[in-house]
Image (tube, rainbow, N blue to C red; front, side, top):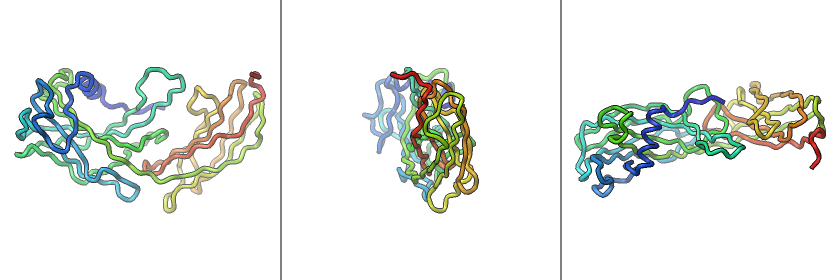
Length: 270
């Protein structure tokens, strides 16, 4: 499933700085001891509150920029982003990034005379039409200052991040199947209904049906206004994993998962 990644150069800068140990880690207050050898600045970022939920999604993002000796660094432009994260589906155990990133720039505040910057009343939420399948409930807030403005020279970049916990309400899915024992060529029919928390409309909730362990899903659909859905799929001789998953359009409503009691009689006996 395609997703937008953290901008390539920004991600590269953050990764390189992390590897080199040059990132100025978030802290409650900036002190001279926070600066790594050779650092000219220390960057911090935090949010108030640190946790959001369905009814309370807004936070104030604040941070500081100080010089290596702990004195305030005024007039410093800082790029602040919200990064919604998704767990990478990886049944093969490949050494790949376990997380997808979907970034959204929140602003480019400039530090004041005390080295502080603020973006008030930020909506911690998912923006866009991409699926929320496998979304993580921790939303990252990042802050970056690059001295020369060139992300291709990361040695003069400073990065900080913090995580906002997004508490999601639970949902559920019920289903029926036309048969529990099928063979290659048979049609599996799955009908069901998604139930979301009271007051949340279930229409357009995404539903995914997996039939093979190496594919995240084989069929996808969306629910009707009442939360009902139906899916049909022709069974193959190697289908061995029948799982139903849902994903709400709202980041603050968690998806549901159910394993289907399907036996594919065409699978070789072990």
